[in-house]
Length: 188
Image 1 (cartoon, rainbow, N blue to C red):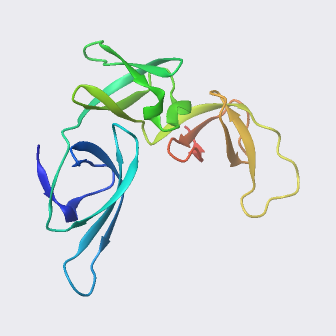
Image 2 (image 1 turned 45 degrees about the horizontal axis):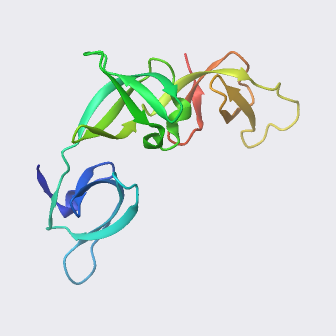
Image 3 (image 1 turned 90 degrees about the vertical axis):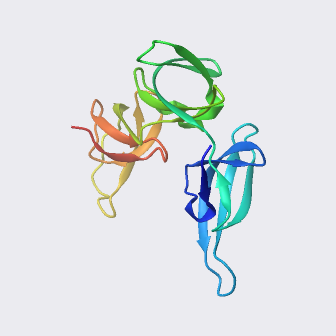
């Protein structure tokens, strides 16, 4: 496993904290007037799911967790697990829905995601930043409110409801942000 300076810790990395891998959720660099600069790190233990904060000096050596990333294709959901397949080896993996952090609603058949592994066990799933979905229900826009970019609630093919501009109609394909669940733009 590699080591890095505490000042080089970045959001999204996996580092070892008290012997277990932890995902870095947030970092804050601080350079006080006296003393050496520090990096405040908020992280989540991938085994227990608990969040903790720790402050590293920028010259402290921090061990980077040996996390493997595999591009896998989503097949289907089966209760509390989702099934992914490695497109190269056709090997299938059952992954708990809890590792998706609420993003499971954006899984579409054949969607390629990055599955993160530590010691041959899945520890996380990273969806693409945006997905293209079809609008199944969009109420007609009404005359009147045209100030401040008005929005309306629309329903997508997966049942998720998002706020979109009033010009979006049923049957259109739109781009949705998988992290925030917000409308991004029309899809071409």
